[in-house]
Image 1 (cartoon, rainbow, N blue to C red):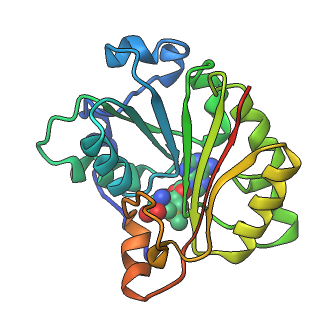
Image 2 (cartoon, protein in one colour):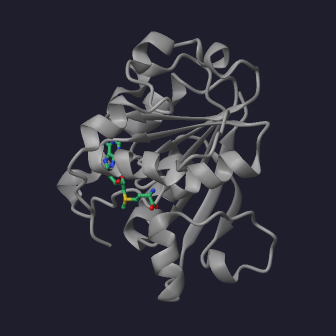
Amino acid sequence: MRYNVVKDANKIINNSNYLIKNPQDNKGKWSILFGNNNPICLELGMGRGSFIIEMAKKHPNVNYIGLELDKSQTATAINNIKNQKINNLKMICADAKDIVNFFGKEIDTIYLTFSEPWPKKQDEKKRFTNESYLKLYDRIFKKNKHIILKTDNKILFASALESLSAYWYVFDKVSLDLHNDERNIENVLTDFEKQYFKEHRKIYYFEASFKG
Ligand SMILES: C[S@@+](CC[C@H](N)C(=O)[O-])C[C@H]1O[C@@H](n2cnc3c(N)ncnc32)[C@H](O)[C@@H]1O
């Protein structure tokens, strides 16, 4: 899938109430921003935002934050909200490696949806499931840790299983073909996934937790 370049991305981002411009100012205070104590779920690399927008609409009693590095993708996600008023949704345009500056111990679930696979050995550290990232997640999860991952990439999936196991996560659900899984696993499609669905590509999935 090609990434679109949005010419007036900065303007769209700056004018949006969904976009939190200085996320570091909300560290430890996201519940106040949302105005409730509902669980907070974070998607890293939300892309065009379909997944997080649909999840927020589907689960009004859960708060959702979509984080994305690329301004054009973020602007597209904001445009995709259209004129809907979704009180339990916020977005951040920033690098995932900086999450500890934005959050205290206040996140319930992290979604890793079709993250960059970084297949080369020398790039392993950049994977969102690398131990260096798991250590960052430790600092923003509430008491229990909960990661949900979807990918079409076998290398990323295998390395994620390995790295989370070594970090003492337990796998509550694993699927090697999410779209044809007979169990009733809730699945809201991401933008990339919509394309893969049409191509009948196999989607790997897991839900992992660590009870603190
Ligand atoms: C393959 S796309 C998947 C997008 C979306 N999750 C989906 O499934 O449609 C990966 C996204 O992660 C974003 N990304 C990559 N590295 C990132 C980082 N370090 N911090 C935040 N976002 C990042 C990219 O800009 C891109 O939009």
